[in-house]
Length: 230
Image 1: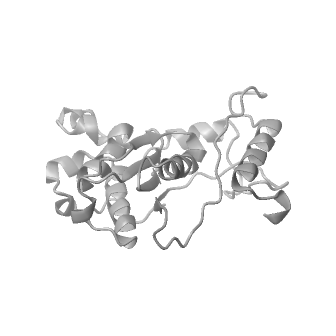
Image 2 (image 1 turned 60 degrees about the vertical axis):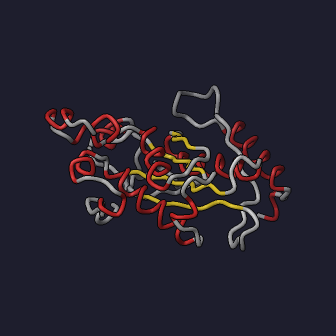
């Protein structure tokens, strides 16, 4: 679990206590981590304001509304407080960013899809810099209970991706932010990326081995890297 998710410096982002209280904690974390990432890349609010930097966000349907009493919906801030599109827009609004801005939900791949979209926006000249973010807080038990009932979860609580011992996945919380840009003392190189879909398989949630093989071949080709080099 993410520690201290309930803590938030609303004043730093010009938010009233009423609006901050109606906001999904995921949105609060995105504001803090998004600004921290941009600050860490030597960018400042005064120079970001009105610029073309973008925001690409990976986020699932929030649990916040499910965890609130019905009376909470009476707040004028409730509509934007747990809206996934507003989550990305809030970061752009708070920092005055006028570049591309969108929220994507591809379940477990949401963060990777956000990085992929951000990289293409930078490489294509749509934006000089993009902050790619992702967040997931488990504030209600229903998703976990449903996944457990469907036999999707690892009985020992461990993910073993691409391993013969794999027996399901583990649900957890996380938040992260990465600034993508070109020609500014880059320390991390993204050689290539690709996003594909499984199409038809045994069921809606079952993987398709041949489709995933095609994805890996596509990203290796995009990166101009041979599989043996990885």
